[in-house]
Structures are given as structure tokens and as C-alpha cells.
Length: 346
Image (cartoon, rainbow, N blue to C red; front, side, top):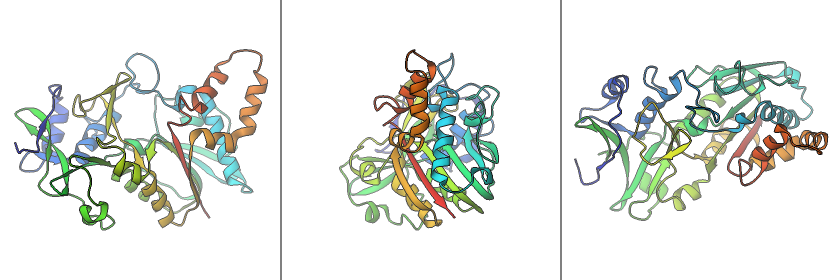
């Protein structure tokens, strides 16, 4: 183990399925990039967290996190109204609403965010996490907390250069290690030290490259219309200067888990997306009107009439819908924690 290797605790709970997948994907030294580790831990067909038949979203027993979908049909109604607003003069009946990354357990009976709410679109369908994405014709493509759940690379600035961090199996335990070579061959990044510049010794960047590649895949398909995604992210400037320990984290039973390598396949792994990279990916594929706004500003700006209608209709009594609005819009809850990226392609 080299001087840059960092052994981590809490990694005894390795399932046989995960061990098989890890060993199959590791190099001759028993190591792999952090992105490859995340891909196995989240999406491996036998060992992946998102492949397990369990409830992940909500406040019930055994769940791990709460999202906007936890407010029930309200979130779908607000998203639907916002999308109609963004379509402008286009008839929503001409578009298929496609939700990518829909959690099967998030809506009773399935159906994605529109499953319990009426909608004005010509059709609606969902694509679950890990399923093949096929898009064509006029679409409204929507995702909620999809891009933060994509594999990410980890880099540390040490001794004058950026070095890639990976995961290795050492004597039956997982450890974070420094890899001898940077794995990225993408010409858009090139030499990281030249591209990103210097940083403080030990500065960590969790680079959400998987999110960018997924958006490239979505945008490259033969469809036109509206793209909307809700997620949490930062600008590249923030990732490069304001998060010295990176943004990667794990969630288990509604608690943030400090050990990213603990319970692989049983806990969620996530990092902030880079809005600059996603905006650039949309622009490369001829999307215009590309904007990023807080979830609060986006929903008030595009679904303000519906919000006002709900408040007025239930002004004199407490209701779950008003509580849901507070959860979705208030800056102390999800209103500022999440941002919304949108763009339109003719």
C-alpha cells in the first residue's frame, strides 16, 4: 500500500455478489477507478443498490432518503404545469412526457411523478434507473435526482499535480488508493493539471463525469422538445475552489454515512453535478433557452398560478398539499437545496 493509500473502516459487509463483481472489474493490482466502484455499487445487476427490490424513497422503515416525490402527486402537478409553461405556444398534446430514472417505489402503483395526477400530454412513460433509454419525436424529457446518482471520478491535488483516486481490495477490505495513471481519455479534459490549474495540497474534486456522459447520451438521440431535470449541483468554480473535501457522500437509513466504501450495494452514493458541464452538453446538441434556477424560483416562475390556486383553496385550514408546497418551495427545505436545469430544442 503506497503512501497515498487511505484504508477505510466499516467495509466488512461485502456481499458475495459485490465481491464477484468487484474482482471481475479490478485490474491486476486489485484496484479500479472510483467511478467503476460506484457503477458496481449502484447498478450491478446482482449487487447494485438501485437493482435491489426495496423501498428507497420516503420516510417509511428501511428507506434511505426523501425527495420531492415524497410530497405525493403535488410535485408531478407542479412539474407538469411548469413544462406546459415552458412549451409556450406548443400544444402539450403533441408531446410524450418521458421520466427517466423513475423510482418504482416512489409512487404507489408506479407510473412516475404523473402516475397519480392527470396531465395534458399526448402520452407519458417512465424509464427506470439502469434501463435502456430510447427517445424519438416530440418529447418532454424529465428527471428528478437522476444525474447526482451517476458514477463519478475522484481526484486529489498532491505534490503539484492532480492524481486519480480509486478503490482497491486489500486483504478482504476495501481501501481508497491513489492510482498510477489518470483514467480519463476524454479530449474535453486533457491534462488535468493544465486544464484545472493548481489547488491546495490535498484538495479533492469529485468530478461528475458520468452525469455529463448520460446527458450527452440523452441529448444525442433523435427527439425534439423540452428537457427538465431537478438535482443538486454547483458551478465548476465552486467545485474547484469551495469544496476542499469533495462533494461525494453516502446515505443509509436517512443518515449521511462518512465511509463511502461501507455497505456497497446497500447504501446510496452521490455527488453534486456540475451545472456548467451539463449546460455545455445541452448547447453542444443545439438546445437553446438553457437555464439553471433554484427549484423555488423555477416552480414559482412557471407554476405560479397553480401554487396560488392551491393556497387560496386551502387558506383556512391545514392540508397535506400546503405542507407539500412548503417542503418543495421553502429555502430551508428543498427550495434552495435543489436546482432545475431546462432547455428546449426545436
